[in-house]
Length: 335
Image 1 (tube, helix red, strand yellow):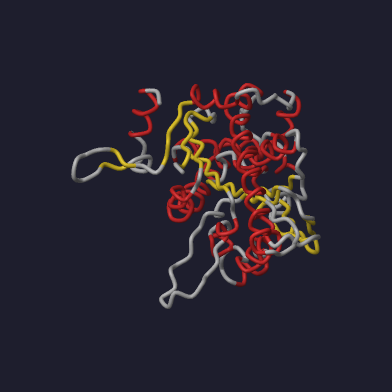
Image 2 (cartoon, one colour; image 1 turned 90 degrees about the horizontal axis):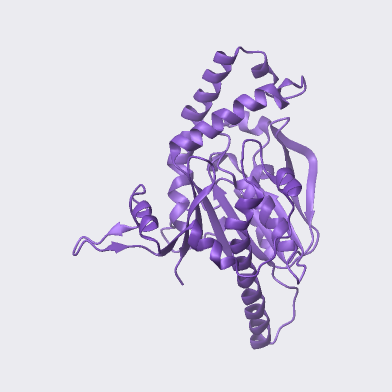
């Protein structure tokens, strides 16, 4: 590992590694890589995306480019493809060992992190890259937004101001969905969410039919449960993941990206009279800026600190972004 990468990683907020109280040595379950090191793992992986496709896949305010795909995401897709192949081989061996037949078990990748940090862009890029590997695996992408309780239920529970917090999701529905996917069942439905209406779409659904790979993206996908006192099995969402990714960045940077995106949406999507947030487009720039900053500070930053960031050490891989919204370092859990 480069010396500069080691210094930067050690300086992060108490997570990247931890000093041994006996000898001061740094302890960590991760290996750390600078982007210069990480891009070497691409090997001969071909670039199968065009600049226009990357522009289409990236979220509003995300500056990701074709160069960033080459630098970070080709190596990541190669790593994930090797994990998928290994898992499929192990599954076949398990079936032979148990002398049973059954549908294949899809490889599930969980992607977590704060709002505005770039989860959706990462998920869409990986979906396209993985589907274009020579084996042409079937890859589906589902987000946790559809598993939020509808607004009428959130209002009934007095949770509208905690939308996106763990308690605002129908956890049972998420677990049933992932359990069905992992069991190899066909035609499994997931609910749809409309960011335009800021609500779950009534009777809307996306159907997942035995993919080779499922990418499951959302802010709280790595959330653990409280340990049961009697040792009873309590399943959690990440129990169904074969690999997990956390998108990380400094709180100040994420807050700036969130507010910048809010101000851009005020000039675009919010101007549609049908938008749930249309009222914000009618405000002055300073009023809108105060609203966006308040939403970040009073809701999203609280959620990040209390619920999202604490799940970071549970990820198999962490993509750490710099102030320019591009990946600056990668942490991969040791085997």
